[in-house]
Length: 308
Image 1: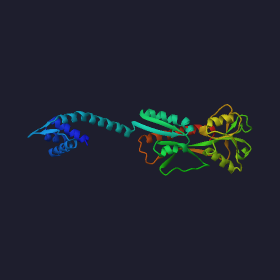
Image 2 (image 1 turned 120 degrees about the vertical axis):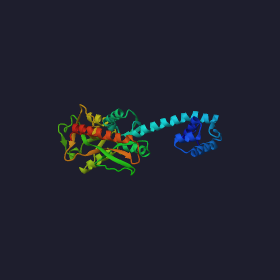
Image 3 (image 1 turned 90 degrees about the vertical axis):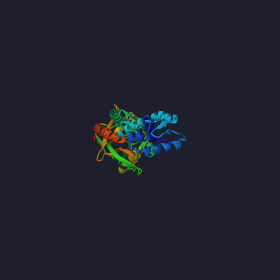
Image 4 (image 1 turned 180 degrees about the vertical axis):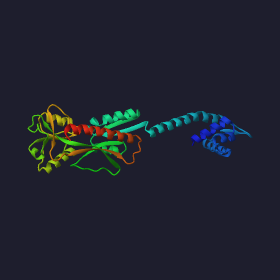
């Protein structure tokens, strides 16, 4: 097996014409250089140098090794430089996962900032609900995943993951502009028992949180329409088809929509970042910092707009 050390040694012997001179320049003993060359000749099955009393004469095989070996050493040097840029975060790849409302409100700021401070990196985004993306994170296909959990529907994550909170968002009640409650600011949950509701799919955390919340007021909501797209949910509400409890990130204001807060209790959804404990990607630190800063700004905006 030819190593970079062998190439460097043979190149120096060819240049100086002497094992002793090559050893002096490389910081070895003449015996060590002789042993390296002999081991390489046995491995290649070729004679690299004709030994003379006070010098050595390179064979054509030695010239070939040096000629081709220079390209190998140059390629290795380039590889080392590129690896250093990856280790420093100047280059590399970052794989992010996110749920739709965070992709729309938080990620644009983060991606813009990362592209500015790390122009040489490649960023990819996978979008889906937390449970859909979790296998990709666990398999190492994602470096970071934006996810969420509800106050009324707590959940845990596999032991190999670390959870970092980045944002708390209010759950707001969306009603049509012509609804009898639309002129107020707050509403009691028990006053909504006869309403028609619009919610996310039954298996979603949001739908489960709604069921548990209404259960605390002693009723089960009458859910007529379902969609995991909050733009669709808000559109259905604005059309007068029902009311909905929507995370502040997913609230899409419109002329036919009004938002209220639940009195006495303001349930929340918590936005978090998940990462593997074993992840050593140097870009993760910058991405985590950017996500936290962007989420703080968005949190102030959405919670302020919907009433904190």
